[in-house]
Image 1 (tube, rainbow over the protein chains, first blue to last red):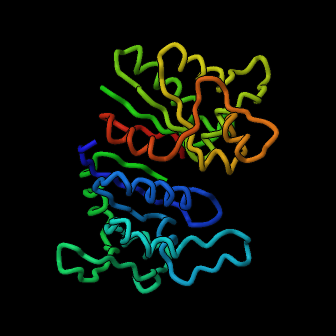
Image 2 (spheres, one colour):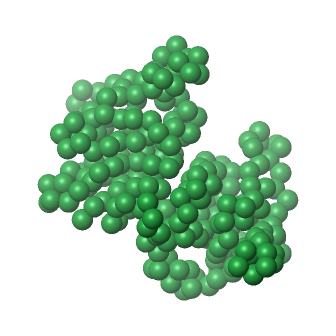
Length: 135
Length: 130
């Protein structure tokens, strides 16, 4: 299977309350083994998935947010976050976890994985994909 | 054209499994190929052979089983999502020490890799869900 396609995983829902976010991340992790060109999009309530300081102790479900920081090790290094979705929820980039990857093409320099993009830029990113999976 | 189909909502609660069924039937009737359908999230619940809807309602599982039989569509149920929701085939039931299995004919349990592979190998991936 040598063909490489552009895969975009679209995350639109809050991390807890429904299982979509967790099961989306499971697809991303398994999919990483297929060496495709992977990007993740976070919009609508999906932006809450990347917030720092998540504490699920009170609701008895697993806090899976640390897993996002491991995505770089799976060569998943493009996380696009929609600016408008952040703003509409009173969030700024400072509310998000710091997620980085080591760029093997640039002497393993540590670089940020999160890119803030506008709604229209997000539309362009989506239009550019071969496969879009929406969660 | 070659279509891959994802169903990500549960039967009867949501129309996803019905709409996908009509889509796949129509696509095949029009000469397209649908090699695989992947059931994820609550969509895995379509695959239980123990659902007994009222007789004057459609039986979503039976519809899919018949479609698989007639057209050789590969109905794949995500193992991780299935195990969370109590859907086991004979092997998994034995392995997990459970006293029953419930996967209907025509469905098979496998991994998320089958979803990615479907995305790579088809021309279009169509998701039915929210």
